[in-house]
Amino acid sequence: MSRVSKSLKNAKVGAFFFLISIFVQFFSRKIFLDFLGDEFIGLASTLRSVLGFLNLAELGIGTAIGYALYKPIFDKNHGEINRVIALLGVLYKRIGLFIFGAGVIVSLFFPFFFDDIPFSLGLIYFVFFSFLTSTLLTYFINYHMTLLEADQKGYVVQVYFQSLNIARLLLQAAIAYYLQNFYIWIIMEVIFAGFFSIILRSKIKQRYPWLIINSKEKAEIIKSYPDVIKKTKQLFIHKMGSFVKDGTDNILVYALVSLQSVAFFGNYQLIFMKLTGLIKITFAGTGAGIGNLVAENDKKNIDKVFWEMMALQFFIAGFFSLAIYYLISPFIVLWIGEKYILEEAIILLMIGNFFITMVRSPVQHFQNAYGLFSDIWAPAVEIIINLVISLIFGKLWGIFGIMLGTFTSLSLIVMLWKPYFLYSRGFKSSIWDYWKGFIPLVIVFLIAAFIINFIFNNFLDLTSTNFLEWCINALIISTLVLIIYGSLMYMSSQGFRNFYNRIQKLILDKIKKK
Image (cartoon, rainbow, N blue to C red; front, side, top):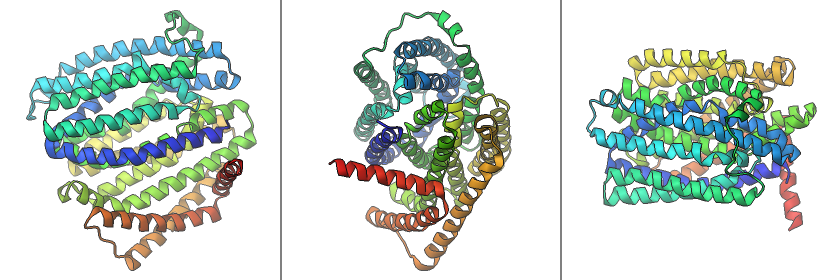
């Protein structure tokens, strides 16, 4: 099966589960807010963010191991794959013990951190340690799934993870509706995490019968992979930057605004997380495919694939950004009520952060494939910019100020520095080659946004008083964006045309075989 075919399989599975999970996620969120309350959902979100901070101990090992697996997978070297997975097991078990210990220490400060909320310390500890237990399963049992992801078989993980996640949400919705019991609601997290671990271990044994599941390798194996350890240390700083961007927002909103605002912010965050999750699932096999492409070292093909990906990511980011701008507020009103609406300036910054996160994806994938993690100053600067602006302006302007910190750090480091680093160290070519391709994509997006906004304001009168009307309006806006932006991309971008023709050929070939 080709790289593109594997990526398409991941995409189909991801899209299928998205259609189901998006409904379940929003349906259950409404019930959780109504029957468990804004403050409890805000508490759960804040504790997840605290746990995200502890997960920094993972140090980016998963990414470094994925990088180390690309070549042995390409060469079908089962012995080396077993050794790399054994190394992952040794490292993850150490990290798991560290996270457990750090979690216990951090929890000692909860009486001071959560001193003014209407929940008992017993409940707070129960929620936190339930989340912690679910997380630790990844380090002690589920680490083998890194092989599936590196082998472009992420769809195997998604089928079972998403199925169990949907079942968990439905059961938690029933518990919230009928029992309003926080403890039973939380314990479902642990139970379903355990089910996932059992099923995943079974499926890995089936897919890779030659894989040594319980390796006898000891800590000495670490010395055999100095390059992996070196890149892991570099990735730790990068992971810090990602955490500050993605993981501190809930904590900052709680600290600078209020616990209830965490739930308000979390409603919008859920929408962007689901869209980002859909796109990541759709392209789950892309990173591994690029790793194999770089291993082949065909520079002409590498450049061609990079610009196909860049054009595609621009189209996806632009399509969803434009659609969200017109549809998100009416959706929030129908979903959970007008009181949960955030101001337009905050929404625009959220969309801006989402857009940058999407279009940076090809650069990030190729950096990972080349093992380019040595620019540890970049995430350090990103952290400083993000936190300084978020703390100063978050105190003044609330959620808008916190979002401004994220947007500024992304714009300066991700959009300006990262492409330069990839082109100078990975592609070994001039950065102007990047900007000559990137700037026209930005211009096309801005032209499309201007045309669509003009049509929306002058020719469309779309109001949503129920979900049916909202769906019809969503279809109208999506079609408008698809036709205008898609046409402009096809006319102006060679990379977009190449990708379109490649997919068209794959589809026609499948039809002919049937």
